Length: 246
Picture 1 (spheres, rainbow, N blue to C red):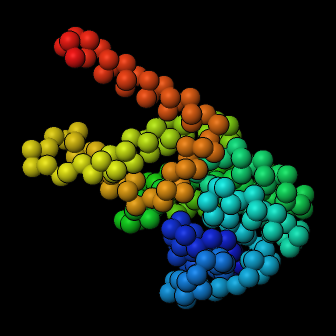
Picture 2 (picture 1 turned 180 degrees about the vertical axis):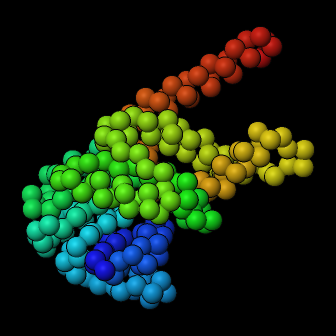
């Protein structure tokens, strides 16, 4: 079995480690308190960042704002032929940092699993997984492996990914987190549409605010889409107010 490391033992890093330990010799690393105990609970090895960099495949599963620093720390320790993969919710910035900071002798693939522990609680079958080629040809193997897990894989560019995610994630997470903060109740007389809103809250309410921040601030196309939505919502309210004399 190939050696694989996961840098970051947060929600997704833990999900990745638990899923991949059946296919790789998995080692995780994280400076957060409790990370070693978490690795033991998952049944995977725990090591230093240098030991993680020595693995054949390195998955960087830290919040997007922390990725640049992690790439810089990994760079001196990566062996020729290593495959480095990120799992960030945006793609253009991580790709820029990977190509800038990581040595030319490693292959690079940018990915975005469009799911988390909540979405994957019943298995991976049918969940979406985005693969962006960066350096080398091993993105094809990453895509094929994703399909072998039952994932629906899309290969695209970092720019096209971020353009689509401005709607798919930035807008959806703004609406969902706003509803979570409102604490909308599970009403007895709910409609099917309202039930969908409750389901959205259940999914997004488990996400960290770090993820929300990254989705809103690290995607170069998010601000325009969100501003258009907020403007349209205000325009509709103004129209209603005007017609009722309010």
